[in-house]
Length: 97
Image (cartoon, rainbow, N blue to C red; front, top):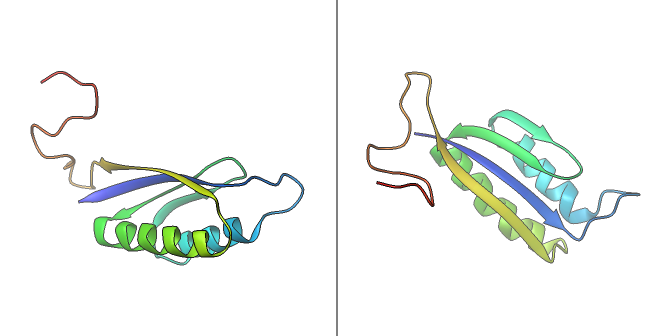
């Protein structure tokens, strides 16, 4: 299974990246994930489920320890290279069955 994580850490500082943002960036770029996109207002990465979940665990723990007061994140199951994705019947929030 492949996952995509999207996250932000707060508080924001537009003049200089806060320590918690630097820690989060370092975790995500060093986790062996694919399609990593790090920006000032949001970050995304994709990869094998185990790697993404390990990165999310480290990201939460270490960015909070580095001073983040809020971490917002979303994790989605995405189609893998073979066209697989969410299990049949697994639907997103708000979707009808």
